[in-house]
Image 1 (cartoon, rainbow, N blue to C red):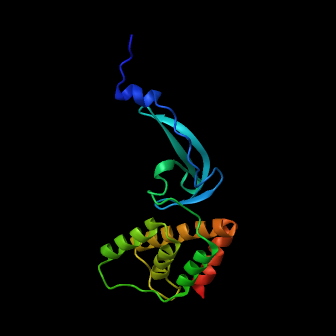
Image 2 (image 1 turned 135 degrees about the vertical axis):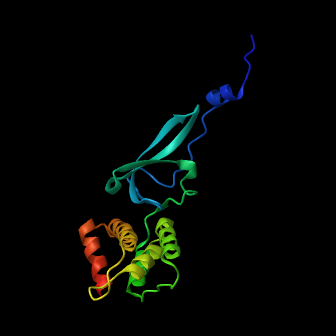
Length: 181
């Protein structure tokens, strides 16, 4: 009796491909653009619709969330290693610059700020923090402005803490000192 080969049986009986050299390993800190800094807790195989996928399991404790990203799609999603100390220095220098607030409608600026935050680039996030930062003598921010500012500042603080291997409070203090200068 001959066995009929269908696409379903081919997928299940196909020889397993050799695992590619992974760019990231378990216990590595990574930045996922729309969520910030997380730690890869495991690299696991999971069967989904008859296909075996290799997944990075990323824990974001500050968001109480676990994300599973296919290994083959990690770079396409924008997932990256932590910023270098040189790039973080550039981001901190950006905070020292003069705020550049465009005179466009708030809704348009808010979209641009959200896009910069979700890009995952520390320098772009620092630009948002710099542009939305208010000193004591300046007028208050609107609710949505404050929400975007806090989100950008939190994202930058978490990456600074991970890059410099310091706790969150010290990173936040360092960021506040730079903003106050």
